[in-house]
Length: 102
Image 1 (cartoon, rainbow, N blue to C red):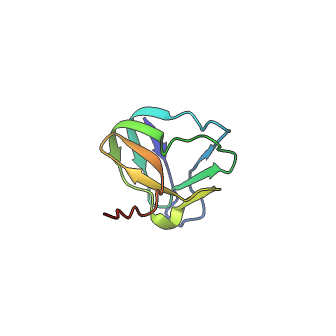
Image 2: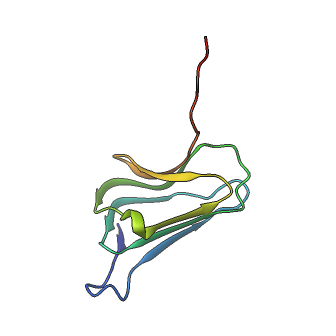
């Protein structure tokens, strides 16, 4: 189990940090992920030079709570967004808009 806590008054909160190397970062795996209100996620993808468009950050079997958008910081040379599925938190590179011309 991975518990990310926060104090009721907001003065202390767990921060989970991922710092990418050129090929990315290893994922955390847990059976149960618990995210308290105020817990923070910080992802530094500045050094990433790989080509993957989806990178797993946390794999879980069950999850309670979510990171608030204001509590998520993602930096890097590309535009990334955090995605949540039934089994994990993933970093997804924004691919832009595709326009098909006939």
